[in-house]
Length: 208
Image 1 (cartoon, rainbow, N blue to C red):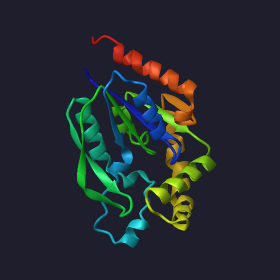
Image 2: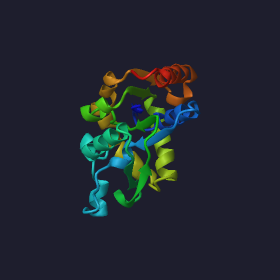
Image 3: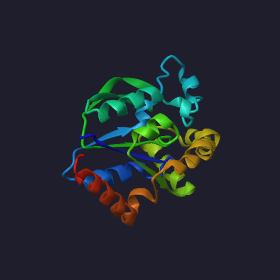
Image 4: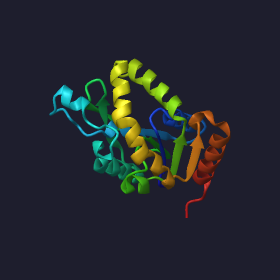
């Protein structure tokens, strides 16, 4: 049986990862594997650290879309993949990879997941998480300071120069491709219940 691939898009800090975790927790009988689009940033180890900081990480060109599309196709065929690991403290791809096994459900999240047609077409269910801009900014500040070790001034500069403009240009318009738009993401129990019910029906449907 071909796995069900669920794509979750939305702005930075919108709650995509929380929604993905809620989905996995609600499907105890199904095997679930996760992919994060952030792992597929292009490798910029050939650049100096200062040059890496100036890269527009919120533009579609920042991602290795061919590799991501190829990995989704492999998982859809029931094949395992070696997912890249991105080191956000160094703005570069790490030497190690993570083995991702095929599963009944594949959940992938990313801010630009619905922008590229190749990735879009690989997703059976396309979800867009919509959250207020001020909430997203607060979450991003907390995450980047605590997890990625970045100073506040750098976070705000990046947000104003690339994150917010790219959100308006690419992320927000991409929600027109979504099958379901969920306000507040994983904190919206009604929408989550509807989504889980739909996923469960598709998993239980007889193979034809």
